[in-house]
Image (cartoon, rainbow, N blue to C red):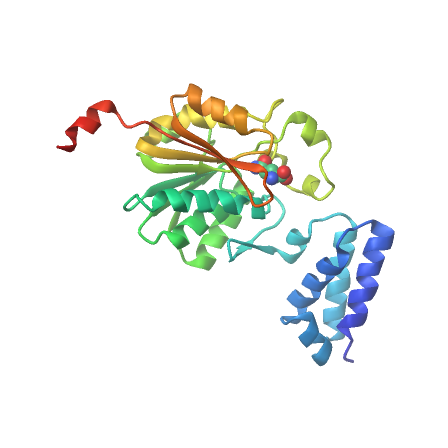
Length: 291
Ligand code: GLN
């Protein structure tokens, strides 16, 4: 028998909001119905959905009631206009991170055939967005987590873009020495403080702590990555980090201490500091060789 998805939408979102304190449940249930029906809610209202489809939506809403993030339930989320598969064990791509991609794309305008590595790649979303928009680039992506790498691999296959994956600890000093030099090193590393980890929203508690936690002051990976990877950056190359909104000055200072120049703190579209970028100085010796 054909079911009315409009009824399921109102009933399940009302239940989630009232009994499970899920904000924006109308949006969430709409996404669930649209995925199950394979068309917009408005279209589905015209055509109706089957009993099995209705049950599938109810099961998804039940998972949402337990606090599971919408993105894991759908199994996919959009980043930079691209579909990314996600699930347990991988950080969900955030819209905040798009500004990091845009910053790197801007820097790459003046670099021919840029060689890029994305550290702590997670789903691979940064690496894939960069490779898509820089067809002459060579893009590498690195992560330690098996679960994250499995999603990154799936996303790379889905998009059919040549991104090379590496499994390694980003703080292992050996890895940069094996990797050659890069024009761009980009990373959205873990950056939450121990105190922030204590007060995570319930949804974020479902995401891997290894993608979020960065020691007492949240700066562990900025120090470690800058220190370990600066040798793998070419002269004049750029190191670009996503940061927590309070970390701009501290991360800029880390880059300064490590000899970087042209350091900039860049806000996202919500006017929160979100990116710190710095350039590895050209060797003075190399400048004189231009003639
Ligand atoms: N932006 C994420 C959050 O606040 C943190 C991601 C990260 O640590 N890289 O949930």
